[in-house]
Image (cartoon, rainbow, N blue to C red; front, side, top):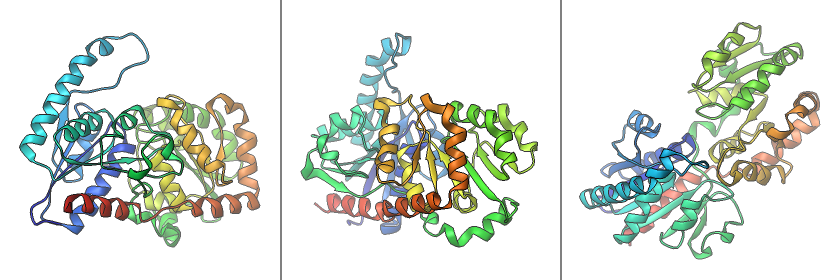
Amino acid sequence: MKQSVNIILSGGGTGGHIYPAIAIANELKKKKSSANFLFVGAKDRMEMEKVPQAGYEIKGLWISGIERKLSLNNLIFPFKLLSSLFNAFKIIRKFKPNVVIGTGGFASGATLFVASLMGKRTLIQEQNSYPGLTNKLLANRVDKICVAYDGLDKFFPSAKIIKSGNPVRQDLLNVASKRDEAVDFFKLNASKKTLLILGGSLGARAINKLIEEHIDWIVDSEIQVIWQTGKLYYNDYKKYGDMPGVQVFDFLSKMDLTYAAADFIISRAGASSISELCIVGKPVLFIPSPNVAEDHQTKNALAVVSKNAALLLKESELNRFESITKELFKNSELQETLSKNIVKLALPNATKTIVSEIEKLISK
C-alpha cells in the first residue's frame, strides 16, 4: 500500500451494516496505521453515534429509504436523493479517496454511485444471501463484490465476486475457552443450561412478546435466560429480570462472554448475526424478521437450515414455539448435529480476505 492512503467506508441504518464497516476499517488500520479514514452515513441513524465511538470520523447524508405506504417521506425522497448525491460528490472531491467501500444502506448506495462516476476504485461487501436493491443496482458499476453466500452470481457479475464471508468480531474465535469466565461474569448456575435471546441491536417486538408469553414455562424447564430486549423495548420487559434465573439487558456489549455462556440461542437472522453464530457453533433457532426488504432474513436463515445447521421458526408459526424449543432443550443428539453443521459454514478469515481485495484495488 502507498504511504498516503485515503479510504472512505459507507454503510449504516442497522448494526448489520455498521459493524462490518468498522471491522474492515480496524483491519485496514492494522495493515497501514498512517491511512486516513472517513465514514459516510445517514443523518440521524445509529452510525452517527457508533462510528465515532469506534474512533472514526463520519459525515452524514440526508437520505432514507422509500416507505411501503404513502407518506411525506416518500414525497420528499427525490430531494433527499439529490441532496445526498451532491453532498457525496463534495465529500469525495475533498477527501480524494484511493478506494470507496460500501457495506449496505442508502447512504452507501449514494456514496458508491458517485464514487463510480468519479472513477474511484470501489468495493461492495454484501452480507446477505439475497442482495438488496441498492447493491443490485450498483453491481455493474463497482470493481469488486465480496459476498458471504454461494449463488450470488444470479444477481452480480461472476467475475467481480469474491466469496469472503462477513466480518466478525475476532474475540469470538475462541469462545469455547471462555465458558468458565462467562459463567462467573453472568453469575450463572454452571449445572443448568442457558438460553440466549437476541433480537438485533434495536430489538424485536415479536420475539420479546413471544418470550414474555413463555417465560414461566422456560423457567419451569430449569433453563436460565439471558435476554437482550433491545433499547426500544427494555423498559417494557426489564421487570422479568426479577424472576429466578432470568437476566434482562437492553444491549449486550461483551458478546464473546455472552456467546460462551449460552447453550442455546434464539436469534433474528441478520447476516452479521448468522456469520457470528456460525463461528460460535451453538444450537440456534432463527426467528427471521419478515419486515425487511425482499424478506432477506428468511432467505439467510434458509441457507443455514438447508444444511441441517439450525432450526427455523417463522413469525407466522409462533404457535409452534413451545414444541420446537422443547425438542431443542431435550434432544442432545439434535444439539450436537446443529452445532457440528453450523461450524462447517464459518468463514473466520472474512475480514482479512476483504482487506486483501481492498489492498489490490489501492495498488492498481
